[in-house]
Length: 121
Image (cartoon, rainbow, N blue to C red; front, side):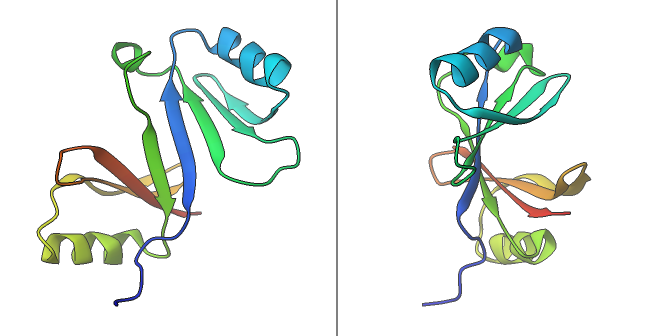
């Protein structure tokens, strides 16, 4: 079997219309820790700081409350992953691009579900 181009699921993002209500729910109701916060985004971890990061995004009003979530894997090289996915016939939804958190790529599984990977800064 070939070496994996992606690593653990690193971030799962849900979309919500009211970031303050989401903050209260995850922090006060579930006892999780808001690790960082931007104008339209919360990054949440379990109290012990271990495990996958949960992101809550309010920057896409049309996506708020939609079914499903964004799944993000960590990769060592977003451009190499892109090249490998193209070579394997995977549908690319967003070419690799630089983001504040690293270099990201968006692609689809055979059913059309969007998937994401990024190389952290």
